[in-house]
Every structure is written in structure tokens, then in C-alpha cells.
Length: 315
Image (cartoon, rainbow, N blue to C red):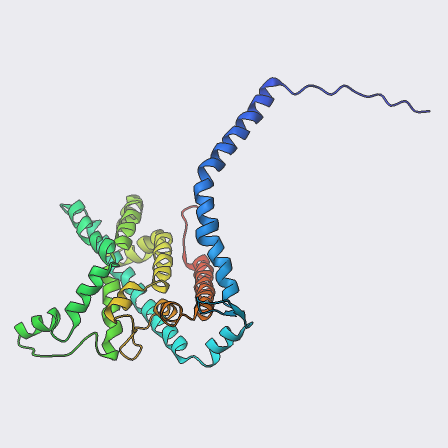
């Protein structure tokens, strides 16, 4: 017969118990501080997201009950809704043209300001202000005033002898261009980020390149761009997301119609029309989820490409 000898369990030291209690208190304090954000996420973001996914499979007109129709909204969207494709085309043209131009203008101005000019804080503030007010309704109204047939631009052209009553926002071929110019005008935020990135590049790299005989363009191509590539990637990603969300300027300039001839029909504007003008909230929810999938796919594509072109200092 085997006798089992039970060994006494060593008591947990007082210091260990107090450390565990302190960590529990710290965790509880952390969760307490996070509670407002968690409640906001669940009731303001998470809850509506789940509800919109359900509504995207229903016929819901806000007034009345939602009727389950399966994938009919998505089938109708891709097969018999030409305005959906028009909105998608306008949004991608806006994105593919404005985002690269914003980067070019922002990086160029940041490079100029990085050369140590006098009154740098003043220039930095002046260029940054459009980023703060550019997305407002007031600026969109001002933009409409500038590019109307009797607007400021045509008045300035008449001063130099060019008489025209051309409506830049009333003509399909140029209406979207005015909104692209408005977005480019808001390059200040990207410029500030580029300026901060340029100041973090070690000057020793440029000194070594000068000793080796590298010119300005070679230094920019071989030092500035690689060292600044994480900042460029960040700015491009943020601007792409903002382009998918563009709404205010198109709504104000086109009086909410997306005209003329759907030339300024941004995707978000079309979503707004279907949900809050036509009260087809089920279809609008489906549009929202398609936009989420498209923007997510573009973000994944950018992250995949970044592995080849983005250089990090520890690599």
C-alpha cells in the first residue's frame, strides 16, 4: 500500500499579494477611464454598424417595418443602377487626381520651408489654415461664388481682357475639377507632417552625399524620399480615406444634386440622397457597406505595396 505524503503549500508572500492587488486596482482604474469610450463605441459606432448590416438586406423606408429581401439591394446596385457606377467613377477620379497632387504640393512647400527661411512659424500657420477651414460649408459656398458664371474668377479674367460667362461649376467637364482644386488647396496638414519628417532626417546623410558629389536632385531621390517614405505612406493613406468620405463640398456646390449631369456625384452624396432624400434606407445601408469594403480593399492594397516602397530606419 502506497502512502501519499502531502507537502505543505508555501504561503504566498505578502509582497506578491500586494502586487497582484495593486495591478487589479490599476486595471480597474484603466477600465473605468475607458468606460466612456467603450459606451460611445457600442452605442454610437458598433451598434449602428451592426444595424446597418441588417438593414442592407431589407427594404426599409424609415417609416414602417423593415422587410427582409435578402441580397436584392446588392444585386440591384451592381446590375441596374447606373448612378451607382457614376458615383463610383466620380469618387475614384477625385481620389486618383487630388491625392497625388496634394502630396506633390505639400512635399514641395515642406522642402522649401525646411531650408530655414525667416518667419517660418508664420508661413507654416498660413499654409495650415486652409486645412482647418477648407472642409467647412462656408468655404464651399465661397468656392461656388468664385467659380460661377459671374463669379470672382471670371471677373479677374475680365480685368486682363478675357471676357467670359463660362460657369466652371455649371459645366460637367469642369465641375469636378473645381472640387479637386479645393481639395488641393487644403494641403497644409500634409505639409506640416512632411515638414516634421524632413527635420528628422539626419543631416550627416546629406553631408556625406555632398562629399561624394551628389547633386540636389540625387540627394532628394536617394536620401529624402526613402527616409520620408513612412511619412508619405501615412499622408497618402489619410488622404485616400478622406477622399472616400468627401461630402460637404460636393453637396454645397451642387445644391445636393451631384450635378451637373452627375459630374460631382460623390459616393457619399449618392448614399445621402438614397437614404435621406428618397428614404430608401435599406439601399443606402447596402451602399455604405460596399463603400466600406472598397475603402478597406484599397487600404489593404496600399499596405501591401508599402512593403516594397516604404523604408524604415531599423531595416
